[in-house]
Length: 99
Image 1 (cartoon, helix red, strand yellow):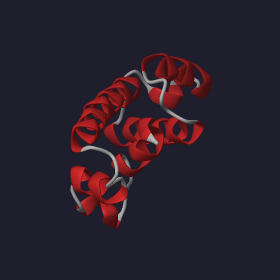
Image 2 (cartoon, one colour; image 1 turned 90 degrees about the horizontal axis):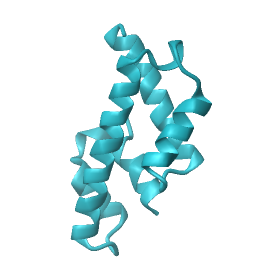
Image 3 (cartoon, helix red, strand yellow; image 1 turned 180 degrees about the vertical axis):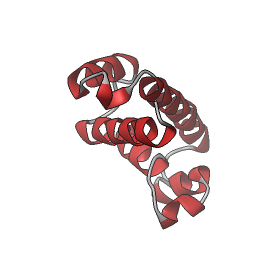
Image 4 (cartoon, helix red, strand yellow; image 1 turned 60 degrees about the vertical axis):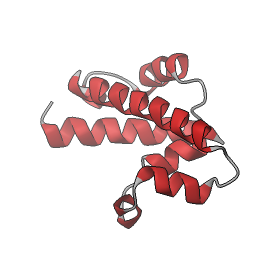
């Protein structure tokens, strides 16, 4: 469930106009607010790791497999789909920020 919440946290498009905490509350009303807040803190750490990987060159200098190993070690809740999203964001940030 936490991995699915990360996908909502990191989504793009019109939904991004809705604050992340509100989106998570709407999608996971059964999850206590404290738990959702804790998830968001962890997702902020995921985002920091994604940016760090992008700054290191992302897909230009590393492989998806190495990225996945590192992310799974730090964030074991991430599913294959969540890891793919994080990798895609790494590539996006690498390209658009010129790393």
